[in-house]
Length: 308
Image 1 (cartoon, rainbow, N blue to C red):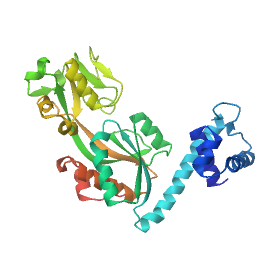
Image 2: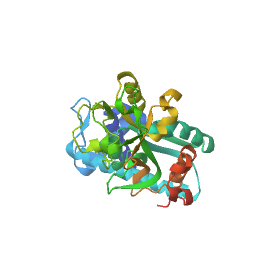
Image 3: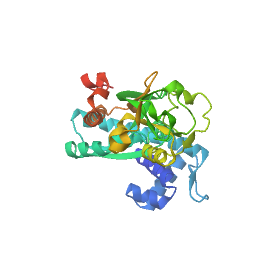
Image 4: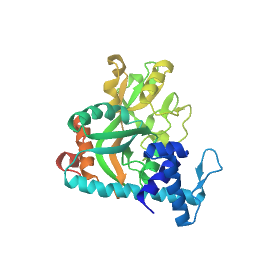
């Protein structure tokens, strides 16, 4: 059993096609198929059901592929230890980012990293939180930017910054006249919220724990779309503090502060507990520190480097 064979079965699982998998691995289809067959013979199992279209793994094949991903991930970690000793700032880093975080971090972060670390390549995936967590657990992603706590023992959370939530209120809404809104008294009528984004972690809003009345749930993850919905339909929504500078000046007049208590979310770098690429975590953290206002940065991150 070799790392190469593990790479091949992972590729076939990804593409569900032997030719496409071979192309991604830079080998011929016959070479890839031959080595997978040798692995099946060595283990005395059938990894792929070749009669299905597209090809899919058998039940035991799924277990083997899941473990192969972790083995390949740990192998890459060994190479990273050597790279870190040489203080090399290169390679590929796969990053997952929640849709409610990406617009405020990624554009400037890409620019900073491409300028300061031209040999470092990011492969970024914007997705739902549950999808990102699954891919971290399966070692399909190296690191993620997520709102925490996640309460997942397999993952390590490294706080980056904390931001508050504010309300974006239509001029037609009766609460528009108030400058500060008590979150315990927020009406659920004419409320627009994301499917995920406010309640999953700690239920900071009162509407997380009671019937949402006439609240409308937006299934995607775009704060910008929520703002446009309020502009068109009335009502109000809840948005992160970092979205406010992206609003037009007239829209910023519709922002209302929240209190009792002031709702906040903590954004963190999230990795598997066996992650060893400490140098790259610090590079990401430094880039985020250049993007986020200083008063929002975690106090420990201001003083200390990340140590795994």
